[in-house]
Length: 300
Image (tube, rainbow, N blue to C red; front, side, top):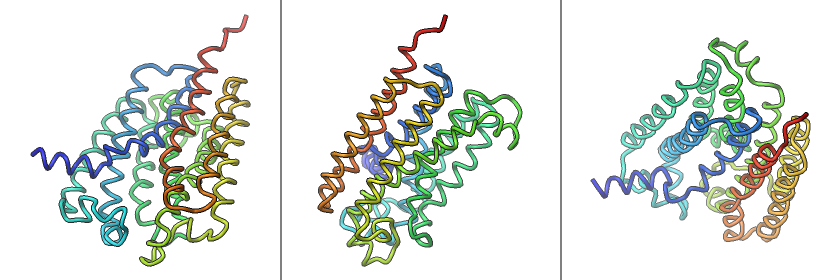
């Protein structure tokens, strides 16, 4: 049992928390913005634990879908499903169990959030197969890793009514623009990730943004960083966030400049380091959001 548990933990990348932190920070930022401050322990628990559970379920699905590709990539060849240590059925059963646990958490919110959760699940399942048909499959991952944003707004503002009209009422247009801005950040860091495996992916024949962009990869990464930070700064300001929030954006921008230094030579080590430390970019933005709202003095 101990050996089996170790394999399950390897499957869900328990030893690599950067993956779920990349998903968590924008979700919490949206939750704080929607609630105009601390959202309460219930929603904080739902979205924090739900993020970890869904990211873990996504790893299970991804490893089953990519098992024939991963054995040709040095970095992924020893993953439990790829190496045969775990069967595909076992991995899918674990993924289904984790997704069901996440859905149980969503059921404690409201109808609009439950409605959105089905779209989020569909996108998460679609991503592993997107690289077979799309030139930049990272765009699908961007949607999957950004869908916590509208769900956070719907959890705060939604009611008992379901359906698309209720979702539209609970999720303002700014939330969808925040999603698009965050998608640019996902494109930036997942392109860095794809740059690590570019040579292997060319041999295998799958498509990634690093391959599609070619020699423009570094420029595109930096452009995506800029689009993400500029859009969030503009939207945050329009939603009432102030100077402390902008300091968080500035701290994130400084990190993006550092990442340029890491990836400009396109070394595997530099690109992987930039990817691994990207969660600090999201942490800086969240810190700016949370501190700005916490230190805001009541008017009058």
